[in-house]
Every structure is written in C-alpha cells, then in structure tokens.
Amino acid sequence: DITISLKDGIPIYRQIANQIRYMVASGILVPGEEISPIRALALTLSVTPNTVIKAYEELEASAVIYQRRGAGLYFR
Image (tube, rainbow, N blue to C red; front, top):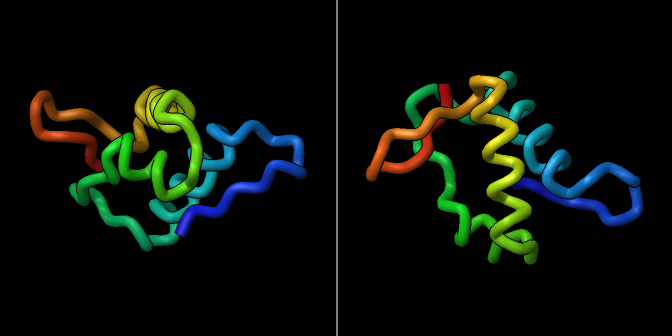
C-alpha cells in the first residue's frame, strides 16, 4: 500500500515514486508485473492523475518501470 503525507514536505509525486522504488527493491513488486493504471492509483490515493503521471515519468526516467505501447506500464 502506498501512503502519502501532506505534512512531511516531500512532494506527493516523489512520495509515490519513492514508495514504488522501495517495493520493487524489496521484492514486493516483481519485474514484469503490471503497474496500477494512472486513474486507478489517483482515485485510490485521492490525488490528481497529473500527480501519478509525474511519479510514473520519474520512475520511467530512472528505469524502474517501462511502457509497452497499448499494453500498459510494467516494473523492470
């Protein structure tokens, strides 16, 4: 589960990205597993889709996730 805090001073998108990185590193999320769709995660966390997009872009830039056109996002 991803939890966010509005009080710790870390941007929400960074909190999401950091927690996903941790879950991948600890083996909770495995390579090839599909990542939650943007809208679904945004609804679950009560944030805007743009916040999740920014987190996913950061994760993709650091090669934690990758996109398969028309098929979704996956963990490396």
